[in-house]
Length: 128
View (tube, rainbow, N blue to C red):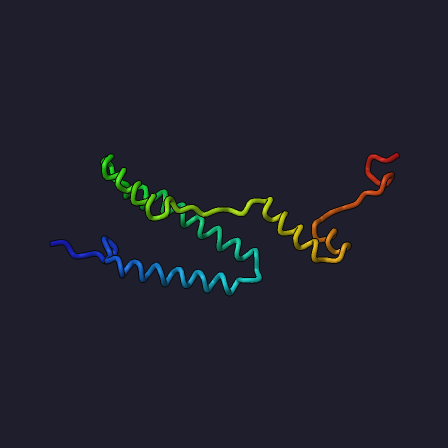
């Protein structure tokens, strides 16, 4: 008889409890980094990389080879919320956020924050 490896097929409560603890830790890290966007971006990149590793590794190798079983899995995925997806903020979202912030700042600061530069006729690089 083979010795049981605790990672072979853990009881649902065991892996769910471990997952819950990990998610709570990540939530706490995100809260600690609340005003540090560069560090939060690093955290998001790590989460996305983890998603890809799980998707391309253990998940892909666990997919059933039998069409009927695969179809059953797809039905279960559909009824339980579909494919897990990590959406990315688009550049447009960031620009919209800057525009909202600009409206709250005094005019001079708003232009500086958005990187807007006003060129007066005759002062540009093409003027003669």
